[in-house]
Length: 319
Ligand SMILES: [Mn+2]
Image 1 (spheres, rainbow, N blue to C red):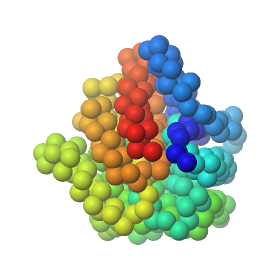
Image 2: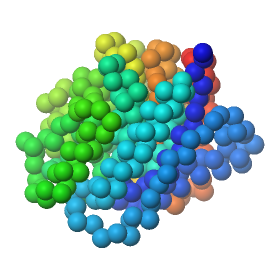
Image 3: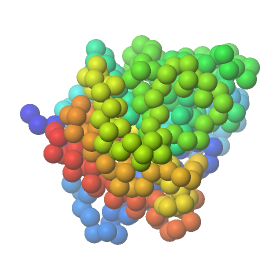
């Protein structure tokens, strides 16, 4: 039976430092409606329960803010993604802040525990912090450290409480055993805004980062084909697309941590389409659209929607 696309909507922003990315999904839907598109009518939908009101709670985990609630949200998303996959769907996940990616990865590994997972991470940020290294304590900067189960204690700066350590360990164990991902199976596109602790880890683990300049200098197709070659052992691939991978001067400031000198939308489309053409992609996620921060109307969501329309066609053709 042919797989079908299933839109998983996870309207949560509790892993971010700035509020509003939970509204990114609605902003993308409004972009579709204003364009006269039936996109959101064309696919089945799975809504993930959220608890964004927990931002009002007092927080005792200074170096991993709202970690108990992020754990619960990632667990809910993991359940939704695993359910979607087991029902023979291709989950196309719309999330708020990027802490969600740990839930998505956990869901994929729950559905296919014996298959090797490759991750294509299109983002300005490495998201490799742990509570032991994070300068901000915002968990949307930590999902890959949790997936890799790497605390980066060599670069430890924070003394965390026993509670935080316990929740952090539980995050790493959602659904299946840790680690869910090997460093050689993680590939970055567009990472250009990192902290020293992350740089050290990228270096020591040998994680490949296709920077914007490299993609333009060597050629996009050459780089993406090389990335697929690096993932040749992996039976399945997850693509995580943070809209801040794009150039904020070109698009808009409608994302939590905008960064200049990123990709343009056509480059993002081409990267995703080429990865999809491998036939291994099981899940795509789009994150961090924040309409409250947009300085150009609803430009970031409109741009994200244009990209989604194009890559959804490619995904449909690949199923
Ligand atoms: Mn980012």
